[in-house]
Length: 207
Image (cartoon, one colour):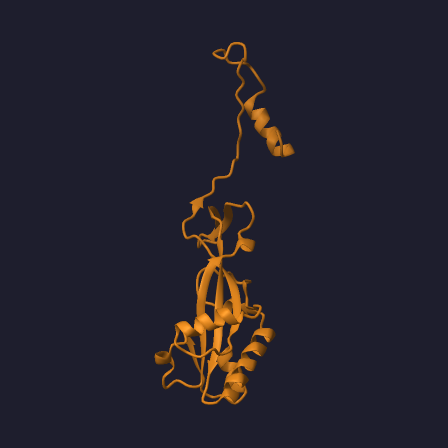
């Protein structure tokens, strides 16, 4: 998406680098945009409350589906720093502006643009600009790379990690109730006919 936006605005060759913006990765690759994943954390707002398991339907290949259960999907937040490098400060700022506009115009990435098994057909991946980084954080970050402080965009997204293991779901089709004498636990107590009770469950949906 970024490459298409750069080409549309006259930048025919911009290297998009994934990783820390180290000088050895940038050598001979200007102009360049560096997307650095600097933090991975649990997204507490996307954990699904107290839900521990979820239901999933699996196509059996013969037109039918089977029901399975699995542990709930876990949402993980990914935080990125995006910085630009070019021969001139003007080109660096122009590339930065194009990136910001691309994020604003495309707040979500559609499923066909993503790779992996965690995204269904209607999945939309949010791409959100974060608030500005303070000068101290920026200074420590660039200082760790032995580079002068330079501007960077902070953006984040949240992705689902879907468990692979599933367990076949067996739905209840018949229920039976046994009665026992409370005063004489060893003596069985007579009660309604089980078949009649099962039929009542089916007709009324309750027991």
